[in-house]
Amino acid sequence: MNTSETKSFKGKALYKPTGKAGEYSEWACNFFTGCSNDCSYCFCKRGVFSHVWTKKPKLKKCFRDFDHALSIFEKEMMANICELRKSGVFFSFTTDPMIPGKTLELTLRAAELALKNDVPVQILTKCADWWDTEVWMETAKSVFIDYTDKIAIGFTLTGRDDLEPGASTNDERISTMALCNAYGFHTFASIEPIVELSSSEKVMEKALPYCHLFKVGLMSGGVKPVKDDLKKMVDKWNHILDKRGQKVYWKKSIVDYLGDDFTFWLDSCVNADYNIFESR
Image (cartoon, rainbow, N blue to C red; front, side):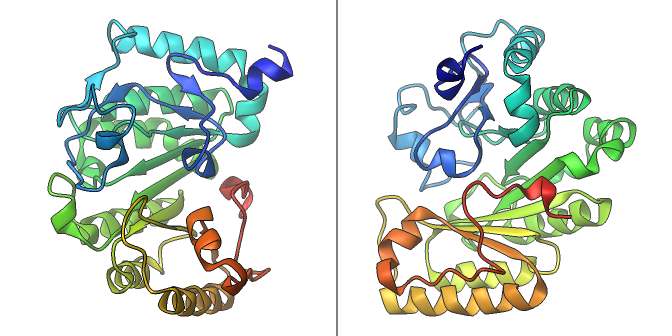
């Protein structure tokens, strides 16, 4: 595959995200549309997926079944294997990839296939109950234990359980993050959207002992915090993370909003292309 094709690759399972999604990863995989977390602020409900969005994740119509989806994933992965080995693959933007009995099984099967081909895996979820499932425990013990340096598991944390009625609570997510950290996985937190600064800071404080990287962003189209209050928060957390040797990526929404008032700390702040798999 030539360079121009790779830059704009959009397959049935794998693709190169752009815009805000591109701040998360160079490559992503979407097997499903729809999500039972039912978050009130979800961009998929309002965006290009609104016409196919449901509260129950559904396998994309281009896939016949899980086996077919996995075979397509493997074919697209191998066609882009050199790039994927450098950047890894992200699960997922159009569902929660870790919902037991719905999306979890296919996510783990694809992650296993990626890891066995030396492709790092990033997973972002609002679920916490998958840790005790049989399929997770079997995969973790038989496969993931050998690839902890190539697995990054992240949790979206807003501090607002009321806006995420179908998801695990924020405290439950942080508890599972602690388990992931203890197991040896890379961990990250998506502090996005910021609904209110106080709620976001509370979950950041709780996750601090277990989180290697924070990614923080404003709500798309939502009410923005007072600029001076946001600047104080940014400076405060730059200082905290600098002292602890942890990292933060302030997303473009925050950098653009603060403008000249934003300060990039060389030791704690990272850019969108930061490779969490090289952080040890």
